[in-house]
Image 1 (cartoon, helix red, strand yellow):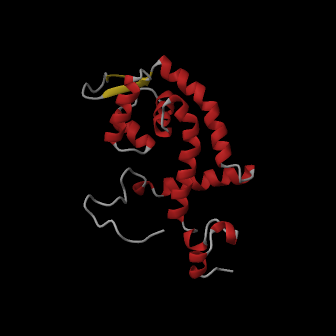
Image 2: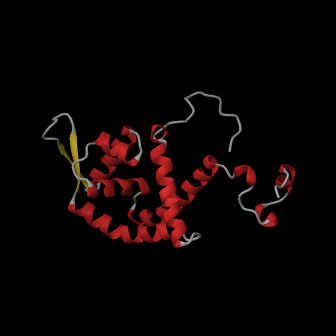
Image 3: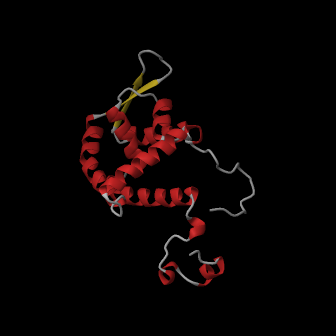
Length: 180
């Protein structure tokens, strides 16, 4: 039975026993909250090495596919090229990655992990596997597999929207409004 919106104004989730009210059981809101949970739990691991979860994703991508250039790396991890550039500068300064002139395109830089970068990825990877398990802990093993499959299908089926900055307000746009 649905609860009237007025009830939610007067009661906290703990009082009602419902943590996510019906009005927020929509993909956009749930995806944002899921992202917050994932980022928070993964950050607990990566912060110990002064990395963000996205910086770890750079290390993982380059470990899996050495030689990527900045543009392809940015596409692969879902960030814009400017953000990728800043992360790469930081990781290069820390001597975790190496940038070299690409042999096939002298304008591009080929990216690879250094030995220090591979060692750090190897150190963090088991801890991140545990963190991913904690994220999915409320689900049974079969449910976990189904969730991953469904999320993958949603991302792949909506690839044109899965790009950095899509849906953000333009600079100077009205900051008011509502939404879930």
